[in-house]
Image 1: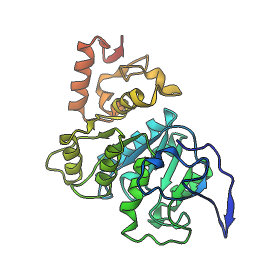
Image 2 (image 1 turned 90 degrees about the vertical axis):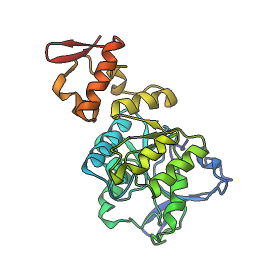
Image 3 (image 1 turned 120 degrees about the vertical axis):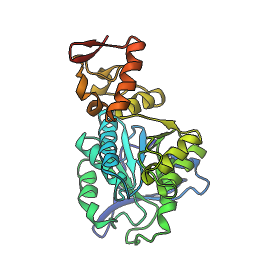
Image 4 (image 1 turned 180 degrees about the vertical axis):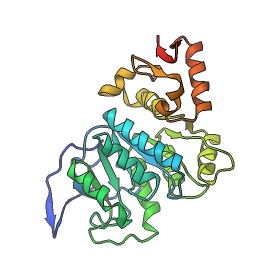
Length: 287
């Protein structure tokens, strides 16, 4: 979807290249947009599939932990994590990706030299330092005006092969990204949440409207593998059960799968019925 390398031009202190829709190497996914934008790129764009991980700025601790786990798992699977570098879920997904030594692409609603919010500058710097990229349709120096962010979301959706929503309110950019992705044929995966939790209201509505629910990082990787192909590295060794060969202590299943204990009990029961795991003392092991 992205070319592996771009030559760079230098404008002030910012290295970038402007890529137009008519140019060789224009990202294929962006051709699905009706208003195909020229894009400014700083950093390295990879050839691996992209997975958008998005969500609300007003997220819960649970959402932050899950977004980091998703970013980490996507990185370890050998895919690119695409997000918007916003507070909350976006920043958490980028942090998880970097922790997993992965490739991250941050799509900004400002110039590529204007980090918003400023507190995420260390994340942006690390993305570039380890071989990721920053992308924007706006020239360097463009301020982060509020109206630019909904437009930015269409690029996140188009640049990705799938969209994952961790937490989302009834209104907001994450829902815009998910719905635009669905309109372009991108599968949309959503973490369900408590019906009375504002940060989950949008997620539950997306599931009602046909999005695919996911119950944790292992579930997500299994679902993405059906679309993107098998992971390229050590996550492929986890297997269909979502457990390592030696198994996992029963009481630690919820942490391993990044789900609640009640969700872990449902999943392990299903896996036992399918003959994919068995109880061995205090351990749950793959068969």
